[in-house]
Length: 132
Picture 1 (cartoon, one colour):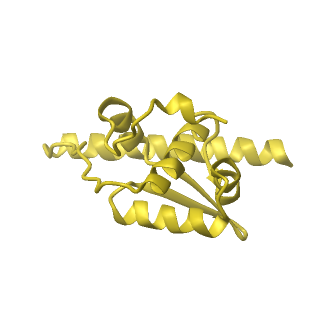
Picture 2: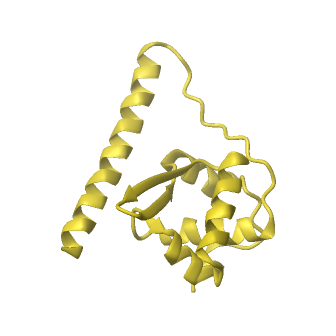
């Protein structure tokens, strides 16, 4: 059952990537420029920690649960939820999916790529330092 869920999650991730590419191509065909800039307000230290865990964990799996982030950050699930909500309000495009009562999150793929190049959220340390 676990491997079936992982396969479906990977399929969903790939479909999301394809949809983003189709949307970009549609805009290009119409002659509209594709907007790749993101405006992110400064994050608090706790938000940066949650962001770093979200970023690093979703490099190896498509989505991560609030519980997984909470364990890695040594925070409560509620603190993680509050940090993610605040990050979204500050311009970080977090994608949420629900599986029953569990919420899973990931970062928008284009944002992830821009973050890797431009450090939009202003992390002080390389992301590899946050892997626990």
